Amino acid sequence: MRNAAANHHSGDNHRDILRRVARKAMLQRGLLPDFSGQAIAELDAIGSPAPVTGAVRDLRGLPWASIDNDDSRDLDQLTAAQKLPGGGVMIFVAISDVDVLVKTGSALDGHARHNTTSVYTPAIIFPMLPEKLSTGLTSLNLDEDRLAVVIEIKLDEDGSAKDADIYQAAVRNRAKLAYDSVAVWLDGKGPMPPQIAAVNGLEDNLRIQDQAAQKMKNLRHEHGALSLQTIEASARFSDGIIIDLEPAVKNRANELIEDFMIAANSMTSRFLKSKGLPSFKRVVRTPRRWDRIVELASEWGQSLPATPDAVALEHFLGQARAKDPARFPDLSLSVIKLLGPGQYVADIPGAEGKTPDGHFSLAVRGYSHSTAPNRRFPDLITQRLIKAALRHEGTPYTDSELEDLANHCTQEEDAAKKVERQAGKSAAALLLESRIGQIFDSMVTGAGTKGTWVRLFHPPVEGKVVSGYQGLDVGQRARVRLAHVDVEAGFIDFERIS
Image (cartoon, rainbow, N blue to C red):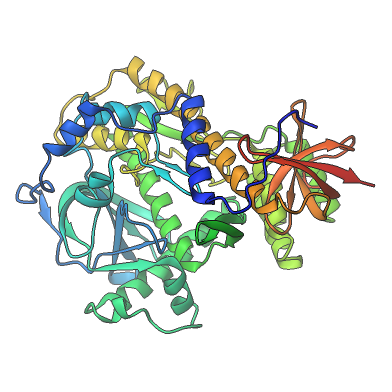
């Protein structure tokens, strides 16, 4: 058992505890929890959104809408669609033009470049850019004119991308929508959200988008994109006390946005390549533990080839989901752990074949993060590369600078995830600290030289097995007893029960 003293926090304000834990974790991982005085001074000098008068195209007449989480305020993208003759569809993805207000080399840019991402913890968010920008002046807010980078993709009737164009435009968000209510409506299980009814033509437009997204998704899965479904839990508070961890499950509206963003990110990479410019790619290599994935499939009564095969893995996942949908999120989590993490790489013209190019779990080649520049620095880098191409200018970053940034963004993304995990575990420890000695059913989520970890089925909490872990491997089930928690350190320790 780890030598960390447990503290009972009955009656304490859990939000305050979790804010303190998160700030400490940010500093320990070398991330900046606060903006510098120079950055704040730059922010104070920005009084309004960028004017749209210089936009190349005026697309404010399209029925643009944002679909995001209920509480999202940093709106990076809008979507719209148009039917084409012959059964095709034109989809439009508008990405907030963040670069127009956050200039390369500025103090605001320096903060974003240092952290590389917004960090989301249960009680506090550490935004990559100040909220005056990310939820205000560079957010695609409802009924406000904004500059955007628009990715226009022409789809054939089967959902395959036939052609694409990228340009700057003026846009206007006509409806701020939420995933859950849109999904219930699309599935025919609930009423149409009133925000949709209030915008002329939006109902039909969203149905066109949904049909296009379904075709795109089906086509990607035919080519080996993986149907993974995990349980993301968020803390629920009552009067400052955490009372539960609530799982969020992906739905049809999530999938609509996800498929549009995958298409936009793929076309962004293709666009930069066609212009002879470098790109900032997101890569997921072939699985590092394919042998264990093969074993997992065998345990489910299925066989996989000895060498990594995305199409075969997707076929297995589809059968597993149909066979046991309740257990499928646990299988998905195991596969994700075994696939290994993604990374950023700089794809430099003339270096073809020297840089990894594929995204194994999405079954795409050439994939650049571009759709969340308020929240991810790689997307802001990509936006600057796109705008340089549109202006017929040279790259705003040198090759060596892009390579250094790729390594830095990969490292800082890992640091940010560790902060989020630690803060999440502290929240879970607060929830569980009164339940020491209780027995739970769990699944093994990690096994290696650094230790063995399990996730409880309910509440969905992950912790370390400190006793009886011998012989356990990813994907196996185990009965465990809660042995110890440490809220400040984010430790949750279990003992395996034979």
